[in-house]
Amino acid sequence: MATTLATVEAREVLRCDHCSLVQFRTSNSLCRRCHKPLEMEEPEPLSPQLVVTPPQSEESEGINVARAVREIRRGRRLSQRQLAGRMQVPRTYISKIENGKAVPTLSSLERLARALEVNICELLRDGHSRREHETAAVLADPFLAEIVPLVAQLDPFQRSMFLNQVREMAMGRRRLA
Image 1 (spheres, one colour):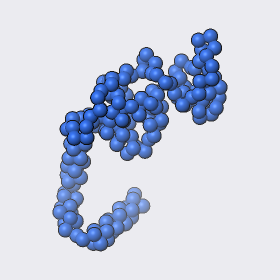
Image 2 (cartoon, rainbow, N blue to C red; image 1 turned 90 degrees about the horizontal axis):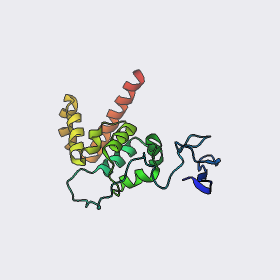
Image 3 (cartoon, rainbow, N blue to C red; image 1 turned 30 degrees about the vertical axis):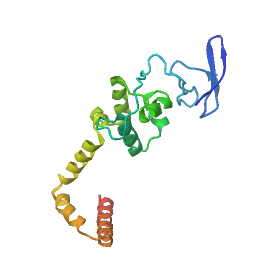
Image 4 (cartoon, rainbow, N blue to C red; image 1 turned 120 degrees about the vertical axis):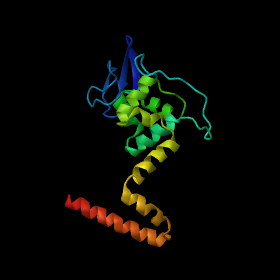
């Protein structure tokens, strides 16, 4: 988060947390030297609007955008700060979305999907249907569909040995490619 040092004639003076450059806030809120976002306490008028909703219980069956954003972001190995940089919004906005304290607008969902490199439907699909979709994709392969019931019958040692063999075969195939 950039440190506000002073306000001079209605211009905010900030220190970039990344490179420590002291500067006036730019129109795009990016550092002049390292081009990283200068975090803002409140979103600018063009930034996504926050819609506050009451916290949802874990038992709710509804769509959980917060969980989807967190899972996809972590799956892509992105930090909240990196995702915020891709969207050009404050990191706190991403945090509020992931904690269910803010619900993104439709345009924000579109920007989130683009930043996460997924279809917007992935953000709106609940965890149960996402797992069903992934399972169906795995079982669409005839070889895997044949192996799955057999692997379930193996004891832990046999399963470990089998998976190690499959890994070795997969690594050998990658080396050949």
